Length: 277
Figure 1 (tube, helix red, strand yellow):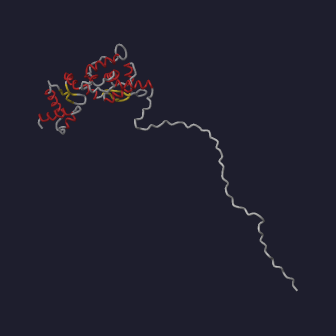
Figure 2 (tube, helix red, strand yellow):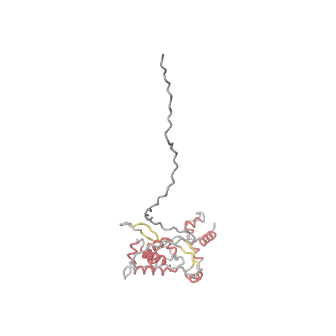
C-alpha cells in the first residue's frame, strides 16, 4: 500500500470514529504492517492538509480525532438553541480542585472549599467519567484518592494536564475556598466547560433535591398507580369479650320400653320316686 492510500484510509477512519483513536488501533487498520513512526508522519500530514478549514485534527489524551475549531462554535450553537442545564458551582469547584491538586481526598476538597462536599456531587462526577478513585491514603479510615480521567482531558480538548491554564495556588489569599473559585475561573476560561453540550447533567436540581430530602426527612410512600388495588396497612387485633349464650331446649330422646308386672318364672317338674314294695 502506497503512502497516499494509507493516508486516505487513516483519514476515513478518523472521520468515522465515534471516539479518539489511539496509535495501536490505527496500526490495526493496516494489519500491523505500518509502524507507529509512519502513522505519526501520516498524522502530521493530515494536520497540515486540514489547516484553514472549520475542522481540525488534534491529539488528545486517549488518541487522535477530528473536531470543530473553536471559532465555529458560535455557528454550531445555532443548531441547538436550547442549551442544556449547567453544572452547579459546587460541582465545578470540586472538579477544578481535583484537576489542580490531584490526587486528593474528599476531606482535602472540603478543607479547600470550606464546606462539606455532597456525596451526590462526587458520584455524578464519577458517573460522568471525569474523576475516578485511583487508590487510598494510608491514614486512619483509608479515604479514597480522586484524580481526573482521560475522558476529562478529551472533553476539554487537552492532551495532558500540563495544558491546563497555570494556577499559582488553589488556596486563595482570602482563605480556604477562594482558591477553589480561582481554579474554577481558570478551568472555565480555558475550555468553557460550563456551556459545553456534553456538560449536561443537571447537578443543580439533583443536589438541591438531595439537600431538601435530608432536611425534611424520608419521603412519604408513593401512591399506587391508577387501576391497581392497594393493600391496607396491617392492624393489631383487639381482644373481644365473650358474650353469654342462651341455652337452647333439647328434644327428649326416645327410650326403649321396659317390661312391667311380675316376671314369668320357669318351673321345671321333678320326677317323684315311688316307694318300693
